[in-house]
Image: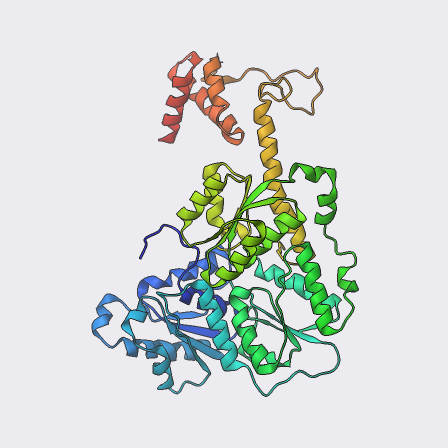
Length: 510
């Protein structure tokens, strides 16, 4: 076992929580010690959901281990059903409770509960979060889907959208974009699952003519079972990027027997035009390092090379279940695949590759900051800023616009900062030049003064102190100047040198 300060994926029961939290009318009874309730924060604080996850913990403590913990679980399950009245219940154990071997599934069988019970066996010491979400969704579908239902066989085609969960990277917005595409093609949505689906919705999955898997990490296992059980074909193209979205539209249209033109004409994407413009030449050939979950990383590599003209100098993922797909993609770009959940190995690989742009998770954003590299986030795990309140998809043509903005802006802003640094001593760009929108004859601002007890005290900055002040970021430089001048006046110092600047910093730090 390796101790780390960062993990790309939580234990598999967190994946189960993502499915339970995404659904309506589902409850998860989790056999877990008191400390495992931390996962609630992922949904309420980071994803900013308005209610806590539908999870009941047994929350046993050390003193309970000498008693009947099985009875604790049964009491918790009975109380949860009585209080929340769910349509179905999932039961399982956290990684710590797994060691007790109380068998939540067997305990529930003996209780004769009034709603369907879905047992989850999630090996916490062999598997992780994405696998846990996929296995949980598969078990939910297998237990609840009504196998007597079949497609209606006439009228508009029906599709299931599979894979979006709670705490997923832009899943809410991606579903909106994909539904727009299907609507433009004249295809109705039978069910979106697990996000927003109830157990009753899961029961009628078999009514769809085909399935669309948006996130293979969480939806593919269930799609394979549906394909085998109901004969439903599966759309496997993930519509991230302009090229993939067009391929997705054509694949869906061919399967449904409809004209793809309504979804392709006037798609509204600005990326293709910009990629052909002279402005894009600044970015052509820029070297990019990509790391995230396999689906988003592979899609990002394709967009980077085929749609933006970047050079992929590194490609990796943290979910080992998709190692084969990642290796195949890496071979296309002539790079060594990086398949690891060790963030230190990722940092070493980024430093060795020396890219000009990093595309990754929240962790790669931190790594890029330390290495002074531009970065855009493309994949979970992410922090609160990557769950924007506004509509911000990754999929579809509007998703391509969002990707275009979030990738290009770090590079363009990086160029701007580089130019400002390069021409800092130029008369037009120096800090003494004044505002560029004022005409050349405009008077310069008066030298800063500090009023104290009715007297006006002139403060004189030495050239060395002024140079040191310019090293402070511009957005706090004014405050630093004012604080230093106030400190110098209070101390009766006529001139401000470097010593005064740092004395003032130490004074206000206290």
